[in-house]
Length: 166
Image 1: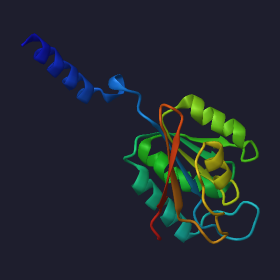
Image 2 (image 1 turned 45 degrees about the vertical axis):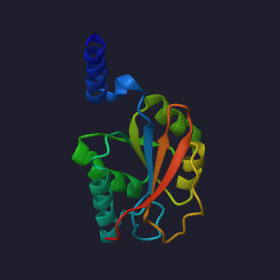
Image 3 (image 1 turned 90 degrees about the horizontal axis):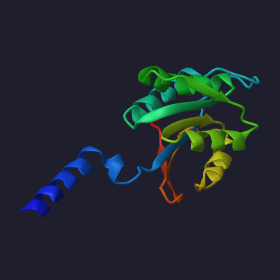
Image 4 (image 1 turned 120 degrees about the vertical axis):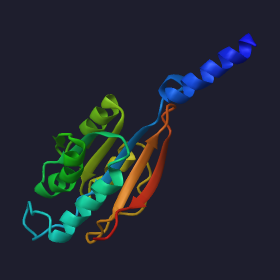
């Protein structure tokens, strides 16, 4: 009787606090900014890009994101902002020329994070986190949403999702 009582208590504790039984994996989401306006150096999002940013926020709002990172550009910050607003989180700005520094910071912070970048930086970030980005992101491609699941042993599973077309 005593062993089944303790076994039942252990099972209840494991179900109520799964983090106590084993460490949860870290999850990192990476996405390119939404559709941008003109060919200026720092264009804002178009209406379509703003709608995509809201769609990304809707997809990710229940995933437990605790940290949001965006490159210094207006279009990436505007892509991150709807989710940041919904979750009451700040958007932490990073220098896209210092990808290694960002990866180190995200890994050190732990937990679930969103990183918003560019067509030429997101695949490299996926690689630096240990994932597999697949083919290059086309200049007119805005729907890739990577989910990197970093297990406690350091192995990374890459899941390629897509944001809904606005």
